[in-house]
Structure formats: structure tokens, C-alpha cells
Length: 202
Image (cartoon, rainbow, N blue to C red; front, side):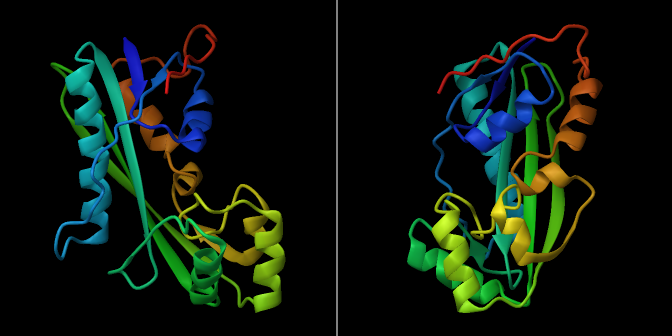
């Protein structure tokens, strides 16, 4: 079965490559604006499904994986990618001594297959940070495309007290434990019998 990851994210592509299945990566380019009063978890789930359905409409022969992640400190306001160092500094100052909650949603879509929607929650507790620590971190780590500005797979792990989740890869952007389970339910062998190289097309 042709497998497409509805994402141009290098992080999600690297994660999916761990499963050693041949896949393509195609950007979905959907409008990610939250709906009025939309709960954070609903936003992540809706966007993951929208990405998968958008790519499926263009590639009806494929099994499409969509994923989206939304973070929040207060349960209401989404935390996105900072885009600038000043916004990253402000995000980390706001997170200091607090817990950031991430909702990582997963959607699988294929013609004739039952739609699958799932989500994994990740609670990331930050230790109390000084401005000097934040600035030293930002001088060494590229975080402009990282929601919440703390790259746990890099130096950002040093800013944290704990990470609580059932699926650790969900924090990076694609919950592989849940994904593997759903792929097997749809008849995709994980682990596969062979070890093909991944195919990517942006």
C-alpha cells in the first residue's frame, strides 16, 4: 500500500523513517487558524484530519497519515512556533516553573478504509529558568520552528523537570506507538518483512 505522510516537517519524516516503511512526504498546506472558541485538543484533531483528507483527495490510491500538535500553558491559548528569538525568549520565560501541555493528534485516511483519529497528551514540566539560562540556550539551539521553543531531542531537555506521556515520540510531533498500532489494524506489517529505504517528496 502506498504510504504518504501529509507533512513537510523534517522531524515527522525522521520519526516515520524509524518504522522502516517506504513512504512519501507531501505538504498539505492547510489553513491552521483555530475556529472561534475551539478547544486545543479539538484543534489538533481537526487539523490532523484535514491534512490527511487534503492529501488523500490528491492521491486517492494512498494511505495517508496526518498529524498536528498544539501546545498550551493555560489550556486555552495555543502556543505555536516562535519564529523569532524574541518570541522564543518570551515563550520560555512564560513556561519557567510551569507545565506546558501538548496535544499531538494523528489521523489515518484511505479510500475504503475506516477513518482513524487519535491523540496523545504530553505534559512537559519546566524547571525555574533564569533569563541568562534562556539566552545561553537560545544561542546554542535553533528553536524558531519548534512549538514552545524547547527541543527535547536537543539541548532543550536541560530546561525540563519531567515529561509525562504514554508515547514519547508524540512530543517531537508523531506518536509512533499509536501509529504502529493503527497501521497493523489496517493491515500494514510493522515491523515489515524487509527493510526498504524511505522515499520522500516535498
